[in-house]
Length: 300
Ligand SMILES: [Zn+2]
Ligand SMILES: [Zn+2]
Image (spheres, rainbow, N blue to C red):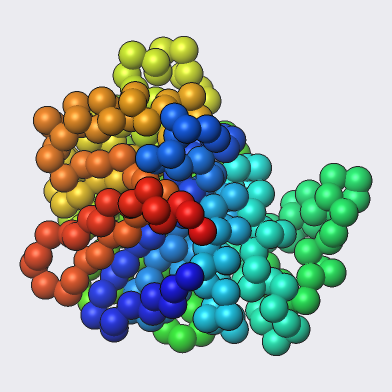
């Protein structure tokens, strides 16, 4: 358990779930982890949560009582692997003074409310979100519009190529920026000029590298990309570091370590995201500090 409010000049990213589609479990998945997408982004002390996959329950347990009274969860989209952790998010159980706001950009301006109320209701699930102590507020927007929050925080968004659409995000803090680009399928020509402009010069891009090129011919049209296309995109855009994310549940630690070594021959600052891994971006010109996760971190 820890309270990790970042010093005000840091932009910090912690991965709480890095698997795509469904969870992975077993001794061959310990290094990279098994939870579905959830990323904690701290702009100074300001918390954003991107996606509410099963990793959200672990983030909630870690935040515990130190969770802010008002929490913003930004959805890439609402596929099951991105919402499944929502009813198990501990801050939603802490009291009626808590507010959890969701933001959804791929439904033509509609919020996530109707979809989530359908999902988290009997007979699919025994408890409705509205029965949890925290108050949920759901906001819709159109991907491409900036999100501007009451405290003045601003997050840029863009529409991604995925069945039903998906939203990419760009967070700024001091002179640093991180982009979350998942779920996305690369398109012809590649790199896509809009995406290139959106992520230009970012310090870190988190990218859907679910497959490798040799697998992609069998997965075309599924809405996901490859780590090779991620490296192409990042290098063309002048991105400093690349985190491959939304990992295929059938790729075990041994497979991913080989893939990581291959991508690092092309881009030394590329890596495969690991559950609970922390990336710190300090204001200034220093490269990102990427802390590897330690096996003992999984004890909690
Ligand atoms: Zn997904
Ligand atoms: Zn999806």
